[in-house]
Image (cartoon, rainbow, N blue to C red; front, side, top):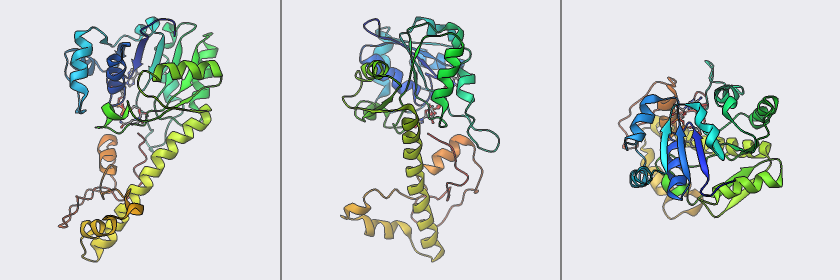
Length: 293
Ligand SMILES: NC(=O)c1ccc[n+]([C@@H]2O[C@H](COP(=O)([O-])OP(=O)(O)OC[C@H]3O[C@@H](n4cnc5c(N)ncnc54)[C@H](O)[C@@H]3O)[C@@H](O)[C@H]2O)c1
């Protein structure tokens, strides 16, 4: 980083991950521009309105706007003024729900002509393995001498404003110097960083998501087994988890997979409502829910 406070542009900055991150960085003194394709989201944020609920974000957004430490832009040329460009656009899937490794480099194309030698580009989206190397090649082919790091986001929506300041941050890059640069950025937010190679970090993030989905899918299966026998899964779950540490991480049924489905317009299986006192079960398998967060 060449200046203090760092000038950070967050590409995808008005989304569920980019906005809390931008607000958090601004609250720690960074000069932040949220670049987003969505004109309506950019206007909302600039007017001081969160486009979605994120507990704890509103007062920090208000402070950052009042202090002129945060602004929005739909113009990709804003990346030219940044020390650090953080890329946190969504993870698109094709019509078969397969991730497209080229989608992130494609989305970055509008920014590439405005990047400058010496900048740090931090990839933060959840990516298909190998995407960091692909982006490095694209930037290199464009004749740019920029540093690239992959530092995956691991917050859960609704907890961003605490988790950004408390979770260890995985940082990955190909050299000690770039690792140190990425760590310097995230030191604004959190005390602990964990170093990996980019390919390791890409898998670490995907394994994290897969592990969560496995747990949700298993509990949803338990729910259906209980339900098929006319039993109340919530009652069984309450009994098996009560004061029993080894089951403490068992999530509730229908949780999260339903959120993922609503975000990705997944239509399989159709929603079902039961008469059980458990939460409504909307999704019973990870097979169709291949969305990533
Ligand atoms: N939502 C979560 O809880 C969560 C947690 C961890 C990681 N992630 C990952 O973070 C990434 C972002 O997820 P999200 O939930 O914030 O998605 P989102 O859809 O809420 O936000 C993405 C934003 O990027 C903008 N955008 C898309 N293409 C762009 C482009 N070319 N230039 C500028 N802006 C562009 C969109 O308008 C949108 O505002 C994904 O890879 C996701 O898997 C999400």
